[in-house]
Image (tube, rainbow, N blue to C red; front, side):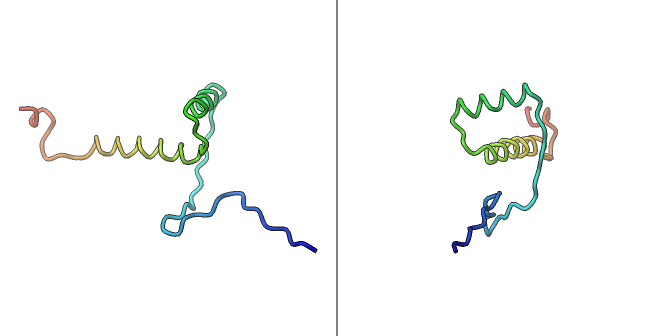
Length: 78
């Protein structure tokens, strides 16, 4: 009798940076079509990684732009 191997639904987390927090969101039909088209055009096979990188790069860019400075922008332009 052969023992069936348990199939995992999700890939295993890496030991140094485990991904343990699941995030779920919904798209409407138009948004979904746009995302599918983009993924197909640029041959992106790992949607999860693409969503993660896209969202986090936007967040990091915004945080960098909003970083508090010692002087106001108009004072630095002088």
